[in-house]
Every structure is written in C-alpha cells, then in structure tokens.
Amino acid sequence: MSSQLPPDDVTLVASPSDLGLDPEKVEAIFAKASKYVDDGRIFACQLALARHGRLAGFATYGNVVLGGEQHEATNDTLFAAFSITKVAVGAAIWLLIERDQLSVEERVVDIIPEFGTGGKDVITVEQVLVHSGGFPGAEFSPFWWDDRRRRLEGFASWELEWEPGSRYQYHPLSAHWVLAEILERRAGRDFRDFIRSEIIGPMGLHDFHLGLPDDRAPRAAGVRFSSEPIEPPWGWGGVPPDAVLAIDRPDVRKIGIPGAGGFANAATLAMFYQVLLAGGRGLDGRQVLDPETVAYATRLWSQPGHTDPNLGFPVRRGLSIVLAGDDGNNHYRGMGRTVSSRAFGHNGAGGQIAWADPDTGISLGYLSDSFTDYLSEGQRITALSSLAASCLA
Image 1: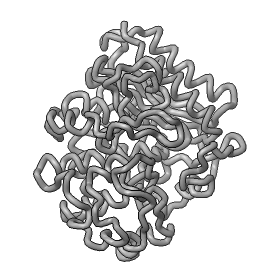
Image 2: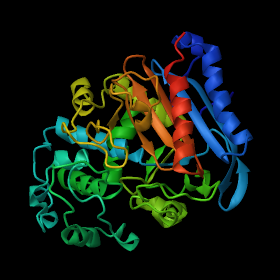
Image 3: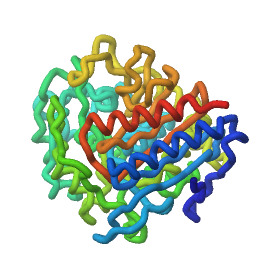
C-alpha cells in the first residue's frame, strides 16, 4: 500500500499504529478497495484514511483515462469529486457567517435582488443550505455556467416547486449556484478564488480545485461508466448520464460548478475533514475557522418532520453537510454502519464519499472514475466506510 503524497501536499503520514489504529484493519480497508478494481467492478479508485491530523494510508488502484489515453492511476491522479464539492462551498459560507458578513436568517433576495421573482423572495440562506428552498429542479443551460449575467437572468426565471421551508428535497446544482453568488456579493470576489485563498490554501491543502487550473488538468481522470447506467427509482434527479460525462469537457472543468465541479485526490479530502475535526485548525496550525463555527455548521439544521422523498426516512443535515444521525440510517447517508451519530460528511455522484467522525477522530476520502448503478455504488461506500469507522486499535 502506497502512502506517498503528491510533492506539493504538506500533510503528514504516520503508521496506523502510531495513530491508534489497528494495522490489520487498516490494511483490510485498502484490500477491499483494491479488490473492487481487481474484480473488474470499477476501473480505478483512490482511498485515504486519516486520524490525529495525519494520514494512516493513501493508495490508488487501476487505470484511468488522462488526455484521452489509458494510464496507470497514481496518488498524483485527481478525480471528479462531484457533490463532495458542496462542503467546500459550505465552509466558505461558514466563514462569512463567522465574520458577520452573512446570516442564515437573511432572505436571499436581500443579497441577490434578481433572485426574488415568482415567490422566491421569502427563501432564506438557511433554506438554501439545507435543501428546503423549494427549487430543486431549477437549471441553467450549460452555456450559462460561465456567464454571470445569464446566471442572474436564470435566477429570475426559476419558479418555485413548493413552499420554501415546507419540506426537503435535494437540490443537486441549483442551491449551490445561489450560494456561489452569495459568496461573490458578500466577499466581493470570485467564489472560486475565495474558496481557494480563504479555505483550501489556509488549511494547508493544495489538491482540491474548484475551477481546474491548466497545469493540473493533465492529472485529472476522465469519468467512465463501467456498466450500463441504471436510472434510480426516483429518477436521475437532474443529473442524467450525459450531464455526468460533461465533467470531462475542459471548459466545464475550468468553470468549477459550485455544487459538483471540484477535483481532488482522496488524501486532500481526508485531511480537509481532519481540519474540521481539529476545530478548523489548518495543518500548519493556522486557525481557518473557529471551533464554534464548525460546531455551529455541523449541528442538526434540518426541520423536524422533513423526510427524504426518495428514501423515506428523516433528513439530517447541517449547513451544506450531511450528518450521520442515530436512527440507524447512517449508511444510507454514505458514512457506513459503524460511525457515531456525530459523524458528518458528504457523498458524490458515482460513489464518491468523504466524512469525519468526531468520536473516533477518523476521516476518510474515497474517489473513483467509474459510474455503475446506484445500488452497487452505495454498497461500496457502505462497506469501505464501515470498515474505516471501526479500525481503532
């Protein structure tokens, strides 16, 4: 198992036993990830496990498509993180709240006047963050993604699908376009630059990219379907297979779609969550977010009675982040069966997952280039997360 990091990443590596982890249990996690590739279920994957601010392991398996050609995947390979991206955007929003530049109680229309048409003037920042704003299916033309004027016109054209705050429904892309605009209005700068210079950089991380730079593009794996796409019972949720494959377009990668456009390696994701576990203290000791801010954002914000319409159980969400909960459904939320109720994280399309457990100090990052069906993807991240969460010595 490789533990070598990309050369510009400042994170530290330690043996599992030095971090209070059982080496055999840690090895079993990586063996499981490797087997998925060896058995031909997926083309490639990357896994990182961390505790106490250090990596206990980081490995990459399989072959990826880079620049249209097959190459062996390495720890230097970047993967599309899809909706894991939402937590990085959320962390930037948390920082604005910490700096008293934003309140969750504010109406979005008071920040983005163009948004307040068609009854959307009552939607609050909190409702956008917890997916209860009432516009889950709202979309932009992909040709508008990099055109702010057209995006604002799009906001004005969006219609409510139900009363804001009355229920939950996952907003795959729409909510985080709104959050990106809020970041730009309140921070006075491009949302991608703000996330990079105020969150990711100060954390001591260098391989999470929202808006993939030209010099990193050759390292970014293409997305592939390793089996025939199977539509879930609840539909594609606004993200059909052709939309998934759009992330391979160079122009789309550069845009940095705020709800799904991040590229990262698994080590960076695991260490991002180590920073949150450390109360917002970066890897070099810099305080990026106050501990109170992290606690505020990762507490339960979902309203009582709100259920997931696809799965039928209660929603447990913080501010742009998912909470494991204590109702026995934590594995459906991507964090496996053995995490504590206080674990938090986010999954991503194609079976990506990153999370942290405050009770154990463990964090996990897992990425793949391979889309299969939603059941297999869920089974993989449940198995890996369950093993990771229970590997204490």
